[in-house]
Amino acid sequence: MPPTPEAVDVSYITPRHLAGGGDPAWITVPLHRACGWSHGNDPLMPRVILSSPDQRALLRLAPDPDGQWWTLHHAPERDRPAWYASFGARTPVEIIAGFTDALTAPATTASTDPYEPLRQTGWSPTAQQNGFAAPDNTAFVKRLGSKEDPGAWFVTATLGPDRPVWQARFCEHTPPRLVAAFTTALADPRPVPRTSLRSLPTCNPSIVTRKSLEVPAVYVASALDERVHSLAARRADPPASPSALRRPPPEHGRSR
Image (cartoon, rainbow, N blue to C red; front, side, top):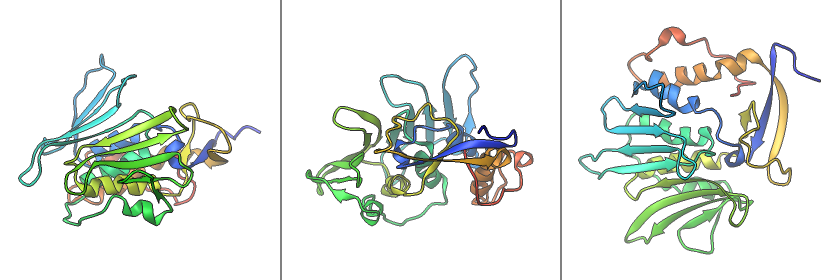
């Protein structure tokens, strides 16, 4: 039975790292409206470029069939060399958001082990050193190098040997708290919502679980505004477009 005009079919997907990329606006709109990142406007180019208010960070979203779609470069700081992070096209935006939300959050000096969120959610050490695998072996986190000379981080979602779905990469100078924010979002057992399954890497019920629900269309439409409002509340200044914000909907039924 099709949904009523006031409702939308939403599929809730687990594990979240196999839910497909989702809507890029989940990242770009809050960065601009809630965090003050500026953007260029070239309608002839199929890309988005956002720069942080201090001009130290540059996020590029560009369709690239042979490489990473999302790339963030950060300028050197007094206590850290320049660093970068990148994410493949099918990296779920909810997981990338863990990284960008931590990047734009008030500064913290907390030292965090990126592996700790994985240990707490049942991930296991891999046969090779410096690696952890998801319980179903469809995702892996590994750091190159050694304890004395640590290198870059690689996070890979896969459907089997030679069947990678996406990869995230963090250079050796990426702040550990940001990598930990990414692994926390990666290991989160909660499903993520999708209103379209076109980017789902597989519908195999032995690999992914889908639960479909009819959700009021107003909740789907206002989910992004609610996210912007929540992130803007972390700052002393109001978001860039306060008139565009709505009163957040009830907690249940939010989707994208």
